[in-house]
Length: 482
Image (cartoon, rainbow, N blue to C red; front, side, top):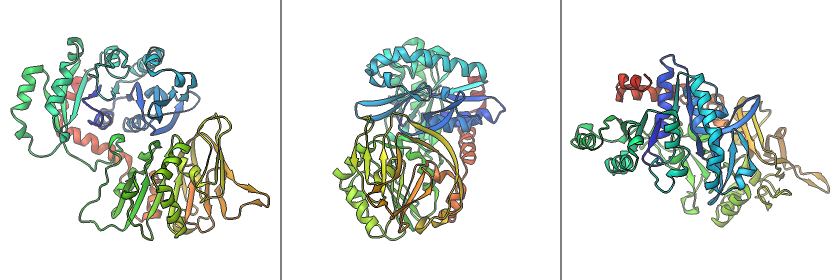
């Protein structure tokens, strides 16, 4: 099990690397996280149907060379507001649990968590478990069903990872360990320093002193590695471009409070000369030029995020950019915002007037659409013309159905449907909206739109495992599963 001193310490990264490291040894491996809180989700197998799990466990399953499925993340909490989250249990929305106070849910969820974990342990040689946040939050310990309760149930051999780049790493490690009971301290097999810059020899005598205090060794010092290629939920908003590469295109992504599935844009980071901006305030928005894009990504609460765009002045920026011939892309919730109207007869999301850049109307429904799709574009115009006739794979996760708006004269003629119920474009070709997530995870799409290739996920996973080979003794990793 991989525990962390804080959120963003590197738990997901290390768990993914371990999944591939053990899989490369011919072992049957599965990932597990009891409860994830994230709006980044993927559509996976759920018995005879489909469900959704957190993106981190989806990638970990691929790294483990196994089929992602809902038992790998039995509880997913999808935030809809600062104090509200939709509960997804074994891949399906559970409205009863969603309405319950969060402290009251733990006891009801625990049997589903243990049943999923026990089944995965029985079916696999290795299960790599990821914790959440910190295991030493003393105000939460009694109801924390993600960290120590899971570690005890599985009698897991635990690694505790910390981000040394933030500072205070040794205090974080010691403080976390010291707040655990002796029984839980005994589960910690090693400390991992993540994101280290410099010569590891300069850390002495801190590792030796920490070992004397805790009896736990530092088993790895992982170098700072920003370009490993794995999406990281807690650092999506870091803008990065190599200093010696001239900027040829800016892709500005509107990062509203309930933005979802931002990890699907990870591949854009790897395109030479492309600057990826995560925009949360109007002052972050540079003067965009011809060839640049504005992107409205998915949203867990479309009407709320649309109101936020207007409050920030970003809605007007999108409208002005489009009116001046700029390229605008809306994905899922972003597509819904680009339409004329949001209807909500069942109180699912909220009614609102859209931005009106596409003549579309969306009606929210109680049922959630979960699909894995393989589609082929027909004729696509404007800056997206390179998509014409391309086949690609992706997935749908949305509540609401969208169709061309109707008027007394019939259908509007300024918007046409590219793929039935899935993709639309305005008459100028500059504005494109689609329900399909994962467009930029298709190598053919990257090659068509940008004339380049990016590393495959398999290459990324092997790179993570190679990093472990360089920085953690293989006999220690073997001992963890002995």
